[in-house]
Image (cartoon, rainbow, N blue to C red; front, top):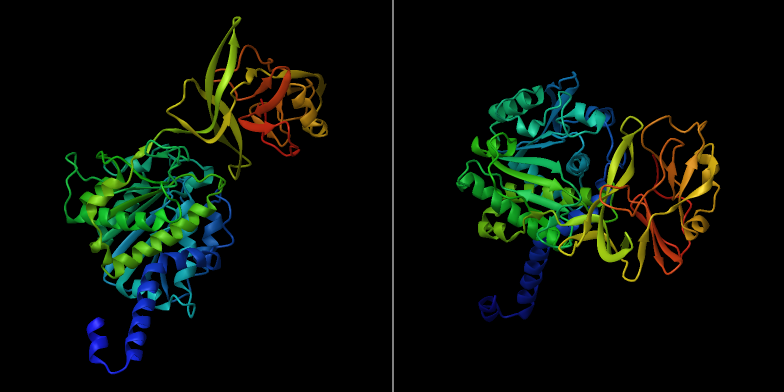
Length: 500
């Protein structure tokens, strides 16, 4: 650039060239940022919660059947006869196969896929060149819900009870037969195996939840790296760079151990550069809408890197700089609580997890929380933590009056009850609340059925996570079904109570 300035009579040409170069550089480096910001424009508004079923996405597929951008076919059927669709878009020589919801309760990338379709249909919005690059240089094959039977139940496994990600070799499920058939027929250059993972994985040994995890799957026990797998690593290195701006320290990778039954491992062995993406947890995002946005940005950016071959610029060795997934995070950790047993006192921590329980035909859920660990938990972390130093753990009391239904209980002043140490309220024998099994209440209380025994002993391992924390005789906090209530503050009538 300095040579150009020396050779020209006018400095204005230099300034003009510098401006053009700067704009081009900025556009190239901010495309992921632009995609992230534009997501709200392309977000599929009919999908806002995780627990949708195939019937909710069939209209979204059908409305594209007349759009010349797409070719849509039924690639096969599930064990229970539900159609499984293949959506083709693009006309490029590089073939990319993307499948989601191989596990029926892992829908984040399914939502992001329909956001991507909306994006690919756009025009005159500043993304035309980027969009054209993808559509001209790649042909994308989406299977937006590979396990519709599992999605119907919001469960991991197929209707046969088989984990189809461990069925690549035996292929006992029709869904696995279908996926292997697509790989054989299409011979994709690249594949994206899109999953969700537990929100309790940590990014290495850290308190940070692994929001996105990657794996460049191994095709043999020796963990060999050929050009096919190397490209997987390079893609992941590029995606990690993008994500660090939005979730710093919250990207992880799985251990490379070879799984001979896994589809990722086998697809890589069959010659397709395979990237596994797992959407984990992000505090305050139970429906994974922020993680969906990250999927949208990251997958589109990766497709752009495939389209223009820029992925080859990445150093594969940086793949190993990404920390491995760890198991170091609980939903809640109560630290340094004083526990009294048999006339003696000691200090302990409580590790508590909030587990989802399906109801209403698996379209909704409530939390059932248990004490998963007890003792010295200093190597572990909590997505939420409470320092109980100077506070004593006690079981809550059972309110002396019984009630016929949850409606009557909802009229109680829960804050006053909790301040008095009452965490439990009992239903009468003639209660019309669900006859059996766990249920929930929006009241921040623990409801006992008439047949359910009251609490006994000090709250400990395996118990439902309901107890109080006292300073002297004053109740400072109540933990009800794994949720903390600060009794020095107003609490909402709406909570995450449990009925058992």
